[in-house]
Image (cartoon, rainbow, N blue to C red; front, side):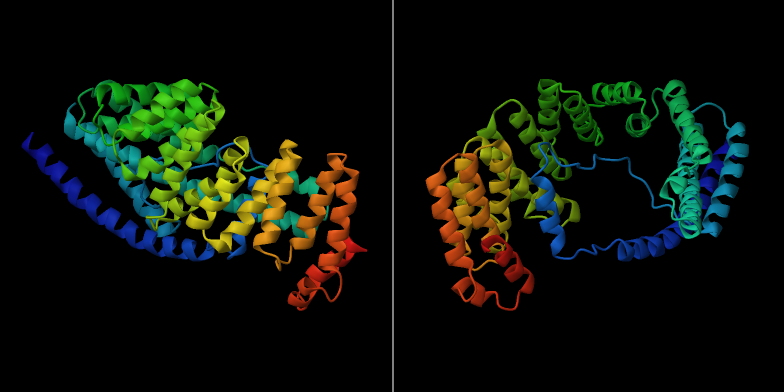
Length: 421
């Protein structure tokens, strides 16, 4: 027994060196990935999101909490070290008697298999993209290239080996100190693999047996998402509200955001508006990239929520105060588009008029005025159609104050000419 204890201590030291080496590779990879993935759209990315939101009627895709994972290096040397560690652990694990130390070694082995699956997946993706590139160079027939499929059989095999070990730990070591973590890992990954019922089962086991676990709020959030996507809104509300009780900063804003959409689905628009305002308030205090994205999504979503209570003036006042003048124009434009889509033409006209009054020299003003004309046509108000057409011509004709302000913007002038001719 003493020899096995020494062996376990040796393993701890050995793996500290293995993971230290991995971290060096991971750091270099992570820095490179961040540089490569930097938003190429620049300042226009937010406007793109705003345009997309006009056609969406559901919550944005928000990443659910994931099990804590190390960055996996794509470096061959790191993978070779990992293979050696896997081989050694598989050999050593047979020497341990059943107990917590053996469970720890099993946990380490499962982690290594999981890392291996991710590494192999990177290779599979590389081969797939390589074949696609070669195909695109050889032929212009896109249908031929579409037949090329990614083969993830090998990475899925390693992934299954990891999950099998985690499930074995659950069955054979019911008192394992890290069982709550294992339950969350299983719940998340089985759900992602399509075994949703099994994933939900492990989430429930986690929150029932370990109600104070640090993974419990994540599990509640994931359950809320499951219920919401299955149109079980009341159950989703219960799960999201339970997640809020943990006062976990990384959970709070996401849970509030999801609860706002539960309110929307239940017709509680005013409550939903207040929750989205809370999300924005919390998110604006954070510098984390995910929180910044969530703030933008919530700000855009408010257009749909405000439209349900016809709160154009409230929307304008709130956005101007919280989002600022620079973003106000795009948000009001989004609200007007939402009203257009809903067939609320009077409200759309009011909103377009508001944008024109607030930004009389904006390049898009002729388009806004043209939309007013079109909405009066939809209302069969011939008199107002004629009146607004005259306004369109007078305000945006050549040498008008607007045209002089936009003299350097050829695209805007050409667009105005098309609309007024």
